[in-house]
Length: 266
Length: 301
Image (cartoon, rainbow over the protein chains, first blue to last red):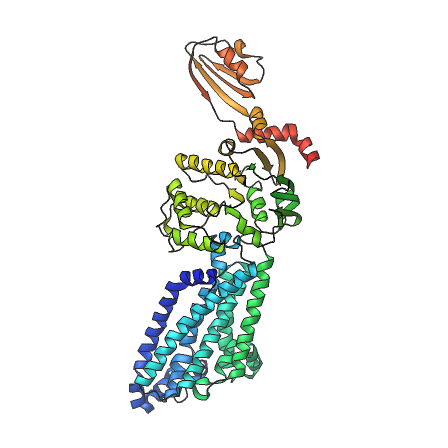
């Protein structure tokens, strides 16, 4: 592994462990109560629907069939909460690649090493990707384990497919934060752009299903390519995932070009 | 002989704010070059241009014979930033190990030897280093791979006198081994003992490049004498190189340009109780350059 990737991963280690533990705690809590939901399906369905009336229900992904393993896993894990957590984790790691060290001045020495600017960005990105991957793998293992303990009844392949989408979605936003940071050198701008796009993208994808005026916008929402294929129920939406991967690749290339062109730390 | 650092019309504007204008400069192998100027004069801008941290608005620069955009050449440079930022939970020796590895390897013994010389504790986490220790880590990383060119931006800031002394010895060793040093400072006193030549930069322009010996001749110095009895002012008037004479009872204050010889001989006729001679004031040298040398400097650039 290149020296800079190893060094960056070492810097990320504590937050990667922190996020893995945090998301795992969330998953443990919610997946361990699934047996009680299943044993009382009508009540749970009713409670969920009354808690989230009208458009709120759309925002939560519809909440259909929440007492089934697929519906429950979709609603509490893959719909909103875990994607948000992993996306925040990825964006924070992404800003720490260029923007944060540029703001605190530690990037000065790094850019004067005999490492090409483009390679520097690429290796920092690789560390971000590996960090997010580590959190994704730990949490995937936990979902698989708790799923089988609570007898959730979703095929393992579908869970892996959904988790892969989760990883690709978070990686996209982490890469976006890295790219904006590489282009502007500003932590605040990169978090604002990443966070704003994530929020708008989620709202457009979920509400856009029933609001025709904005439904065309779903095509530019990264969440569309994560949620629309319903991987928990249907398995791998390969084409959608390739879109996420392709967009990420475009962002990385943009970051490399932008960072190679500009003054650092002015 | 090929110059180690060569710039031609190097200019940098930050938007409309001028950072450096039309710098043409050559630094030869084996030379210690002092780069002097007040804060904000363009020293750091020049240095960051040479390291390709920032890009010139116009003009060009080569370092060790290669364009500054050449990535590989930076492995042969040791750089100490002016505002060295070190942060994080990593311990200093792990960080140095990382830099060494990227630059192609440095023996562990070499790092320890430098840490010993500068009395630096490398087991401290980077974020908790004191200002002085940070600067020491900065110096170690700049010197450790025995680079052909050292570019040091305000290297002595934050160092105590003992460590400063050791640092200057390290600079002399680098020169003895035929390698080159470019170091900036806003205090002439910091570089005058090691530098062969100094360049003086002010408001983004190089106003003079001088031999250190010649510069010292020009230096303006404030001198104060205290005698055991009041002295007549006339005894000190009209002495060559002596200006601004003020006599108050038994004390004398004046300014000298160049050699103090005439003043010392005049004072020797009375009983001297106490004498104070300040270090040459660089700011006054700048002023001298502005008033007397400005036309020549413009023509020369």
